[in-house]
Length: 164
Image (cartoon, rainbow, N blue to C red; front, side, top):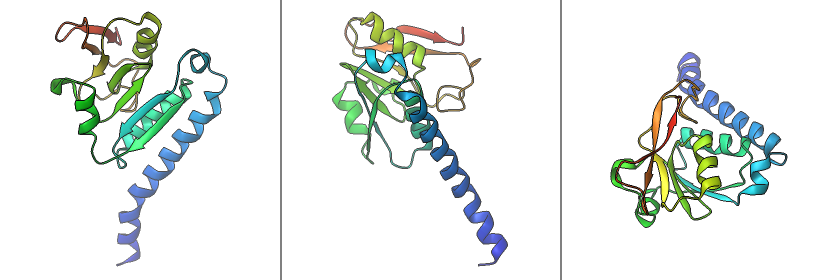
């Protein structure tokens, strides 16, 4: 392989590796001093081992002060089914914290509200992979809905409106 072709082939991989490494380092710098860590228990995230946006969401959760344990697996479907996440709400990763299921790129304002208010629902979700949601470019002006599911939540019930 020519040197130019080798460089072009490896450049995206190197850039992704360096950006994910910097996310992890930033997340650990603030974790111990954040008040949410003391208030809330450990979060467990199940994600694909190759998903960079999931890794970015985990890094942001750590920056927010959450203690996060991660399971990398190629079978992300089983955890969604086990937690009764409606198929229309599926995203790329699933988190569990304090008896709630968090599906996808949920903003931390919604997660904090869920844990503070403790409604009788199973969890909250941001379906798909919305550009501008945490881990997907993190655009504070992005507008999207966080949907509640299970328990007392009506089908499609909006729990939180991001960017509004």
